[in-house]
Image (cartoon, rainbow over all chains, first blue to last red; front, side):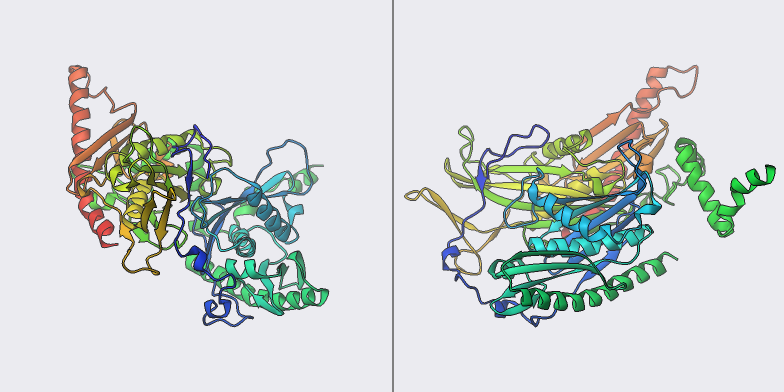
Length: 261
Length: 327
């Protein structure tokens, strides 16, 4: 990795690369994914650990952990809008940051396109759920730091769950909680909540964000190749899981509110 | 006209009518803190207590309750070679170490690199915005670089093949919650993460001019190794704030930190010997009793304060040692 000399940080050597392992070429091109997916069927999601209120400095916050995805989210707002132009509805600003050690290859601390695409996806997922007309001239800032990432799709899904929980923790007016779930087409089957390896092997992936309480879809992000019938099937699979996740989020918020009393 | 106006303006009681008496008091206190932070803190310190309930470091006071609780959790991030999560009260710092391979410098051909950096993202506090590292982040990174570069990790131990191949350890700390005393927390996180690092076996092949590593699982004759650490040079930092030139506050929180005029950091090694001292700020109040030689008094008071900081740091160090070495 060529590192640009950044005078604002402590710099290492000009050029360094990730270690190359001797057994890399021995890894089979199609790893035995069924074995890797231990104790989990293709329609099960991984257990979610969700803790609201972890960041005391923020108006609302949440920390989510599912297997190898760890994301911290904090919400500041509603606060004064930076631009002076009057807007009747509030603005929702989502920013995502990866830590340098979040993936296998070290990420340079500079922000790039991947951060932006995840931020846009999460913003789209949340936009319809927040009652922005209650916050004219204000901005709600949502910041996410991805401590460990297990694939982009996993980050978008977990990130939007964390963000929605943080918004609820901040007491921001919303129509409902947003939950997300990912599905991938591997072979002919639909695998829910795929890991990074599974996503790489898949023909196509789909991320569904919805508000299960109202039965409304807020965002669908499909990439890769899928038949139309497979898209519908993925949506159904994700929908069921989103409802399960919703009860997890509600329970976490309830426990957090109880402990504050 | 009058009735229209009076119904339009909300009376003060409307907002507070649904709050209990205790909540109203808390709201008044929070408003006072926001409007007059300095006086708010002074009122507490006059009663020998700090806003979060801790004691101040006084001659009469038992100083074990002057520090916040420390929690350390290592090795939870699988994408790193070593990681640590440290909570110092509410201040939360996560640190991960990534090991990469590079060519050593020409004039230090048998040394690797240690690159520490601290990131203060907008997530951790309302006073930070997204963008390039702020001055505070840069100063923190530079201070940590100085302390860690003291020789805790002998750079020659990171060499794989002199002149051709060496390890570079990127030690990146990210602050998740900023509640004061980030320097202590970040240093502790970096030290614990480095202790947790496990480097795979690396061999340089001169014919291919490449370094090949071996995963510990695939070949048990080439195991991973822990870093070689100079135990006598492992730093632990203890920071104090001086408020209004007279109150010594160990381990300041974010609300106290903004009101301090001086910060003193004492860095000790594992045997409670001093590795480094730093003072940022104006120093102890020189004007004490009138009519006496002001220079003498200030000199004594400064030396006293420093001596007190050192002795408090040594006492605290014994407690922290158990945390660092038990993990």
